[in-house]
Amino acid sequence: MLLQAFIDDSKSEGVPPFFVLAGYIGRADMWAKFSVEWQRALDMRPRIAYFKFREALRDEGEFNGMSEGLRMERARLMRNIIEQFAPYEFSIGFRLDEFEKAFSILPKGAYDNPYYFASFQLVMRITRNIDHFGGSLDHDDLQVVFDNQAMEQTRIVAGWERLGRKLDVGGQRQKLPPLVAKLMRSTPAFRDDKHELPLQAADMHATWFRLYIEANRDGRPAPPIPGFKTQLPGLSIIGTQETLNNLAQTILTGMKEQGLQT
Image (cartoon, rainbow, N blue to C red; front, side, top):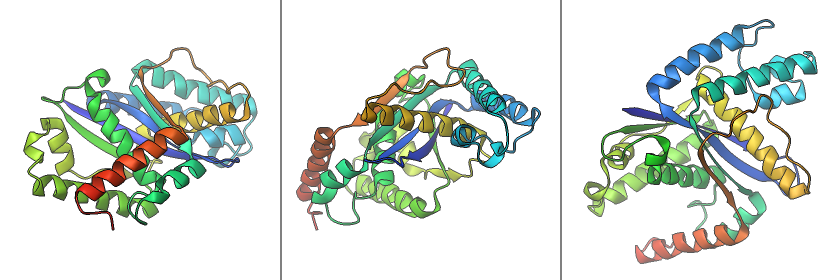
């Protein structure tokens, strides 16, 4: 069985700013059916070429000039489709200033990119908990699909390949579960969310999760998700200064043990 994880990001504009990666994971055959229903929703009048939740909230892009009632009705419909197919959700978010403080102990260019760090944390957590996402480490395959981030794609792919080479040199790849070994032999896909419809669902989740942790920062109630009826199963990570410090220290210790601290 092929599982597909679709991941998008959302960056905060407030102070202090947050960075979020989030998305959904499910069977490939489910995503094919999901995309048919999502496209039908896009084609409803007034037709929109793609769905971005933040554009619906802000009266921008495809929703420019559309009434709030129509914008929220379309957002409710999209959420209903997500709940209909019930993929597993995942998210990670942290304050950028706390990330920069914690990871300042690492060599420049190693882990100082929040997108690079968050993407590997998510993929690691997904594979560790794959049974909770309806998959198996021994019998299934996992494909990771990111929203097309031209500036970050090179660094993520380079880091992915570097990890793969390290596993080969250390003879560790054969010790990995089959799903993880196959995943490390592949390369993450980067696709345009205007055409890869499950990425539009990932965008909705990432945007709402950012709004949720921003509301917590500001001491106010989190905004409701239009159309929300059912909490989907999954995992959610909010990095505190302490957890980021601990992760950075663990990475630094590992690099020193391997002679990679400079």
